[in-house]
Amino acid sequence: MASFQKRGLTWRAIVRRAGETRSATFSTKAEAVGWAAKTESAIISGKNGKVPDKPFADLLQHYLENVSVHKRSARWEQFRINVLLRDPLSQVSLQRLSASDFAAWRDRRLRVVSAASVRREWNLLTHACTLAVREWKWLESNPMRDVRRPEEPPPRDRLFSCWEIEAILTALGFEDGVRPDTVSARVGCALLFALETGMRCGEICALNSDDLTETVAEVRKGKTRAATRRTPLSPYARELLKLLEGESGSVFRLQTSQVDALFRKARDRCGIVDLHFHDSRATAITRLARKLDILSLARMIGHRDIKMLQIYYRESAEDLAERL
Image (spheres, rainbow, N blue to C red):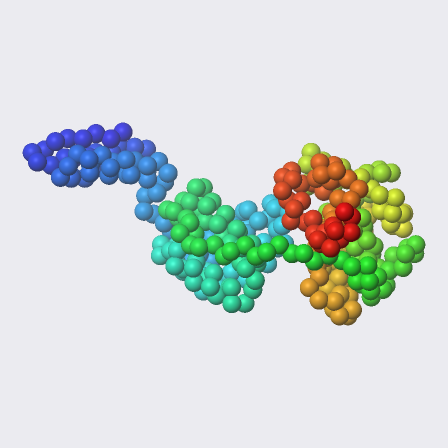
């Protein structure tokens, strides 16, 4: 609670909150009231000027060990944080951390990576700083609020072409109708399965034999069955799964790191430029949009916000013209 005492021509403000007592003298009551409000708010929120004398690297490491490990994207966040730990930003003391430090980091990163990559790292840093303010009390405010965010780049319009699919499958050693016994061949099978279902690489690698019925795959969003979506399987997707029958546990027996590395090697051997495994999701959505209505498609893909489909739907104007 705050109280005010008039002493001659001055006003004394006294704040008592959470076992702390602070006081100050001002020339006007308005100044005293304003100071009291800020001081009381600071005490309540734990902003007592006690920002720890630690480098920003400690905050990032704390975030990695206590937040990132619980996310599905833990592997990628660990990679991004390791990159951040090598940047001069990580050595700035939390007591001196300011918006200019993040602006300098942004400009350095934009010289070596795309704006899209910087925006992903930006999201991680913003969340870490927000937690440092609200929960850990390591910062008094989030300095990133005062820094200009890189502009969002135009959405990708890349799709798999038929010849690119065939070339990559050949490079991976996958033959249609033949059981994929090598890791590379299973990556090829996973690619075809992604093109049929629109499932993400991580979802495919996490697919378990217990998650499958004859016509549906239960895609787990978390570690429990409470967070799942049911993805219908096309006849060809079912044929691909039959090639993998006989194994219990993981269906494809792949790690996301294996898929990423082997896909890139096969793509590069084929001389294909600017194509990612994740583009299979956009390719699948663009194809499925010709068969399913928008609500059914959003449910199958797992988008709660239908606007997200606009990012992945990449049919060209020329193809649309042919359908008119």
